[in-house]
Image 1: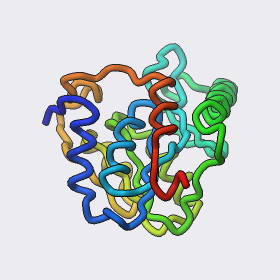
Image 2 (image 1 turned 30 degrees about the vertical axis):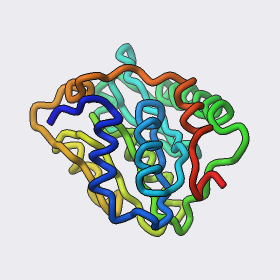
Image 3 (image 1 turned 60 degrees about the vertical axis):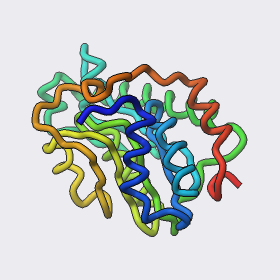
Image 4 (image 1 turned 90 degrees about the horizontal axis):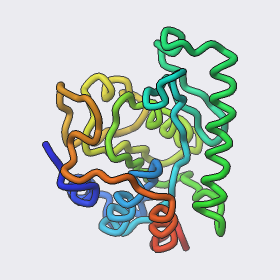
Length: 214
């Protein structure tokens, strides 16, 4: 399945998630790519929107390759291959510190007028534009599970089968529109896949309406 762009993918996800319409869902985006998608889904479900801030931990010498992730609280997820990728404990400590600083900067930049929206007791839908290793989604789901949502849902347009298996048990429900075996990168499943800027993220959050932002 090829999606025209992120908005088209979001509209398809919103249709699958239609049962949550008017149930006050909280749609949380993993920045930056998923933020415009979360805005569309929140609007169509008449829910609230915010971001969940997690960062992948980059492999030594290969910043595109994730060896794990860290959430806003500082909890760290490491893949089983982190050591084989050359990451010793000193490197991991430095990388965690660097990514936590980026998270702090993004929180101050993205939501300066309000604290993170409390997901306790809410139906929480976590959105990304696609999963490769799944590391950041694992961190996001872990962070949110600890905050006691009523239901925790992972919703993505595309992910490889092995990544979906890693997510089993980490959410109450996993929605994935396409799970191809021949998976190389998220962008291969989009006709148009531009980078989303910080300015676009800020604009989406500023425009967000619904119960979460009241």
